[in-house]
Length: 358
Image (cartoon, rainbow, N blue to C red; front, side, top):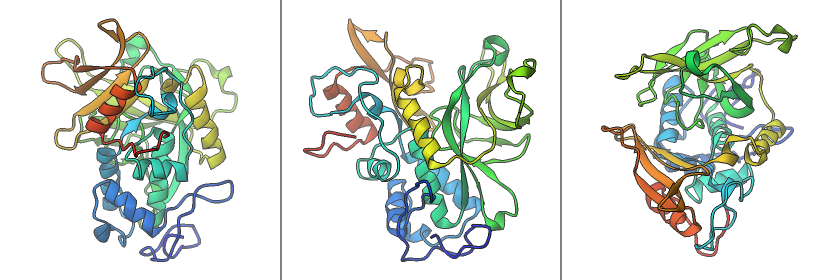
């Protein structure tokens, strides 16, 4: 366990040196041991010798969240590619597998310098935080179908529950809690959001301002009361989209949730849905994306069926936002060889000799 633990389950002092990693299961939460935390810290660009014995605080939480987001890729490659050895193989969407959580996800993140989406990234981040003595509630949310679009124009419609994030506190926070999310791709706050109605933060990235709002029901369902005969309070993260020369500014919801801790078995089911169901987001597009610390811009490799260049199925590699609005970037054939080369050169993927999988 991480340090001495008080009766409320929160760490009360610095972590000890002898602890071992425990992965989440039906009867235990995930928590990294000291050795794995050192590897994780090095992976996100932090000196383990300066961090391993720190106590939980807002400053530490903010530093860990920002370092993770700048260092770890948001990507869905495993859903679409099962075998990386045949360079000529055509990549078909959903032709891969459900990459496992827990130890397999840690090895993928640390050993292969790859990434993942919310269920990988936030579950690993939660295990990292618990080492330091943070109390972490892993929670699931419904994502807005039209993320980033004006709800007054396109309306509100939320996907099935298919996103994971974390709500965090610690003994010295004295009841103040924070929403942290390291797995939402774009519309992503770089800093923790205080967990109370109306809390607003200015993220130092192009994604801008975020606000947490509490309501009595899912936004957009207020007039359909028979949909929720047993409503629970909802929390929704909103992102402010700034005005352009042709549009006004507006607030767009990213995701909405009822605050309830999810067990590892439930998260595994949601992870399976996200990588298999025909309507799941990650089944229908290929993505690998990294946030650039120097500029706050984002480099992304993206493909959806119907994207072609010179008669061939191609993904687009581009960096946003651009000064001139050009999103053309480079076109990459949707074959294992060209995609693997870009993932290695642009995103730091490692492909060990003789290793074909994810």
